[in-house]
Each structure stands twice: as structure tokens, then as C-alpha cells.
Length: 193
Image 1 (cartoon, helix red, strand yellow):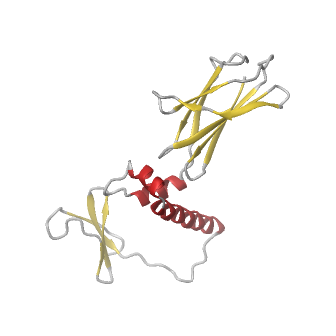
Image 2 (tube, rainbow, N blue to C red):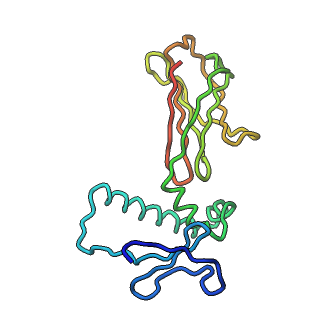
Image 3 (cartoon, rainbow, N blue to C red):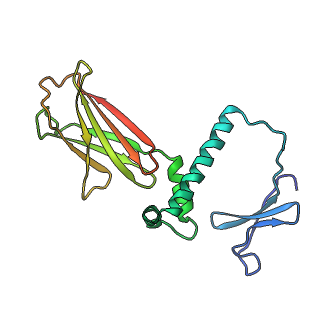
């Protein structure tokens, strides 16, 4: 068959079927379609490159995390909210482990360097952002304050941090936001005023 694949029609005989057919063919689902393909061959003497070995380690860690989620009633329930038949809890947790959150924006339009002024952070994750930490540095690079931002009750991607210290000179100050997800992955963004 030399790498050729054929799509199968949905019918009672092969509907929702996947797996090996003899020693040469496999039948698997790709999206809504079933695909018939040659069975892949694996060279048992192949030595993975360092990058491949690192990726294999990450996949093993992701599987360990997903299994731990299945054993934790609270985490299993959290991930179960988005679970479907085709995307079970294990698969969602596995993907979440492999995907770090990202901070898309630090909005300082309401930050005046005064106590009570607000910095708004937009952060996303494939599943959920667990927390967003905001750090404020003065122009000399010294940490002035840091703390956790509060999730906006209406706009779930926004996190508001209310300043507790005064920064007299704003030009050159740096604001850093670090988002963390349930598996502990982090994504960050920094903005200079």
C-alpha cells in the first residue's frame, strides 16, 4: 500500500472501530472520519536525539500527572467539567500538563503608582489559570511589591491587582505578571512604563 490511506464510510460494520486489522493495516478515527492506513514500523534500534528524549520525558510526566488527576476526586471533578466522550478527563489533564498558560496583556492605564490603583492582566490557559502573580519593580530594578491578582468575576480572562505601595516615579518601572496553571506550568509577560 506504500503509505496510502483510504477513508471509510460510516456504516454499522466499522462504525466507531479502530485498531489493527491483521498485521498490515490499522483503522483509526481522525476527527469524524475513519482512516485505513498501513501499520507503522518502528526501528527497535533507533536512538532518540536529545530533543526527542526530552519530549518523551515530558509525555511520561504528562501521563503521570493525568493518572494523578484520575486518583484525586477534587482534580478529577475539576477536569470533568470539560470532559466529553472523545475528550475524557485523562486526555484533558494530559494536554493541560503539556500546555503552559500565557499572559497576553498587562493593562496599566489605571495604575498611577498610588495605593489602590489597579493593574489588569489578561491571562489564558487551555484549561484554567490557577493564579496570576504581579510584581512591581522601580526604575532601579528593585522589587517594590508583589502579590496575587484577583480573578474578575465577569471577564474570566482578566485578573486585577490592586497596588499596596507608592511608586513616586513611574517612567522606567517594570510590571511583571506570571500566570500559573493547575499542573504548575508558568507563562509570563513584562511591561516597562
